[in-house]
Amino acid sequence: MKLMSMSPQVGISKPVRLTFLGAENVGKTSLIRRFLHGVFDTQHQHTLDEVSVVEYEANGTSVRLEIMDTSGSFEFPAMRRLSIEQGDAFALVYSIDDPGSFEALQRLRDEVLDVKGKPVPPMIVIGNKLDLDPHCRKDCWSAYLLETSAKENQNVFKAFHEMLVWFNLPCREMETTPHRLHRQCGLIVAQLVNLYKP
Image 1: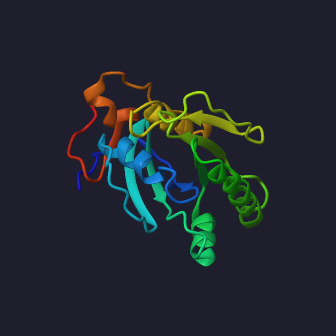
Image 2 (image 1 turned 60 degrees about the vertical axis):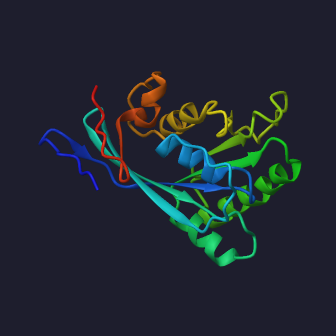
């Protein structure tokens, strides 16, 4: 694991956990892998709850971002409730080609509100698989809505950038060079050895 060297001027914020929720096969894992590693896996694999840790420095602050990938299965309510309890902010993901997955978000949103109570935690809605139906849009409870395609790499990094801004986390301006997209916001990922060079 590559660690950051901290200067005395750098402040350290408390860890923030971003939890991805959504039905099975909506692309939660694909979005996270595309963002962290710049890859898309065409083989669907059943996901167990998994946390990826990202550390980065921006605006004089060191941020530890924990990205929680959940299974999407409704068979384990206790595990899902624990994931919600431990989350600070939530990305609610549905698949644009699956109306049922959007309906599942209402249930998940209600569960987040029930578990977290007041104040309402930051929530963002992501319509994934835009490559399958680019004309499909949803009205999302006045929540912030982003449409993405992990497969075609459409708006994935914009989505994460907007989430950091939406959740009031320090973030540098996005790079647009394709081969450096995995380094957005000065990220240092545990599995990568590349350091961001401003």
